[in-house]
Amino acid sequence: MPAFVPDVSVILAFALAAFVLAITPGPDMALFVSRTMNYGKSHGFAAGLGTTTGIAVHTCLVAFGISVLIVAAPALFWALKIVGALYLLWLAIQAIRSGGGILVTKAAGRQPSFAQSYMTGLGINLTNPKVALFFVTFLPQFVSAHDPAAAQKLLFLGVEFIVVSIPIVVATVLFAQWLTTTLRDNAWVSKALNWSFAAVFMAFAATILLAEGRK
Image (cartoon, rainbow, N blue to C red; front, side):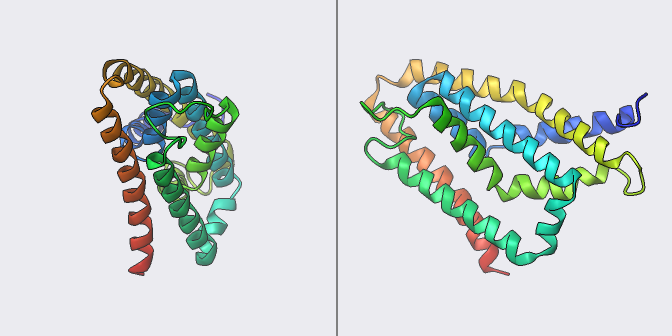
């Protein structure tokens, strides 16, 4: 077996951990659903590709030690959390504004490009403290610090996380597309979904800010 491939037991254990994190509702999942319901599954997949790119970035940062430096410097990590909270609040505002980018009901002339949906997914993933903490504190537990191939194994596990996440992203987008087809004609349901997405983003932002305020 190549040196960069972890033991089978490690691969299986990490796959389970990655699956649990991937199915846990969060800003990423809310974004897939909202983009799909507003602009179609292509935009949902574009947002999903953005978050997947973010995972790849987190993996590289951990593998090469940069994320550890962020955690070692509390001010930098605090700044990351605040930026993430503000970004989520901005998404919440967009969800309830007329013509906003998260709305379930379409707004003429306001449809974003696929690149914008991709960048929104990338931004929400990179500024998500939960994802950063997972990769900084949990991912290294599956690799020995004294292993000469530790960096390569971390990269392998990052790729494994992406592989585990992709089917969940696809299933989430397809479900959102079905839900849109079923419910979009109901104006009351559309409005309720708009406010629900806003509440989700604000709740995650509040969690981040309140956690920092108690420290």
